[in-house]
Length: 205
Image (cartoon, rainbow, N blue to C red; front, side, top):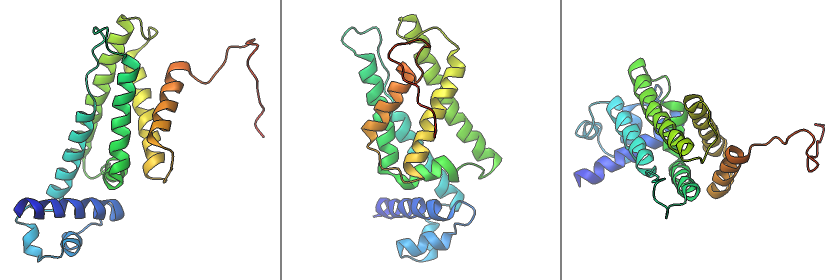
C-alpha cells in the first residue's frame, strides 16, 4: 500500500509540475489530486523538492537505460539499426510520459543552481556517450573524421529540439518517422553539391 501511495504522489507530482511549473506547484496540489490528508504527503517526501527530484531522477534513469551499448566489433551487429533502436526507445520514453518530458525539457531548468548543475551533469553524461560512440565509429570507418565534442553538442541539440516540438508543441509525427528523419539528416545532410545534375533549387516564396 505504501508503494502504491508513493506512486500516486509521483503521478500527481508529474501532472502538477507539468501544468504549473516548479515554483507555482504546492504540496496542497499533490494532496488534492491523490485525495488524502496533507500529512500523508510527508510520510513519503520531505517537501515538494524531494518529490521533484524523485521524478526527474526516475525519468533520467529510464532514458539512460534506453541507450544500449553498440558493439562495433561484433560482425553480427548492424550499427545503424542499433543506433535507430536506441533513438527510438528514447523518443518513445518522451512520447509515453509527456508530463515528465515537459518537466525535463522546460520545468526542471532554473529550479535552482544546484539542480541546474545536476541537469548539466546528466547532459554531460549523454554527450560523453555520444563522443565515445563517434570516436569508435570514426576508428571503424563508419563516420568521417571530425570534432567529436562539437558534433556531440549538435546531435544532442537536434534531439532535444525535436523532442521539444514533439512534446511541448503537440506535434503528432510518429516516433519512427522522427527517428528516421533525424538519422537521414545526420547521415546524408540536406545540401547537394553545386553542379549536381540531380539538384533542384527552389526559391523560397
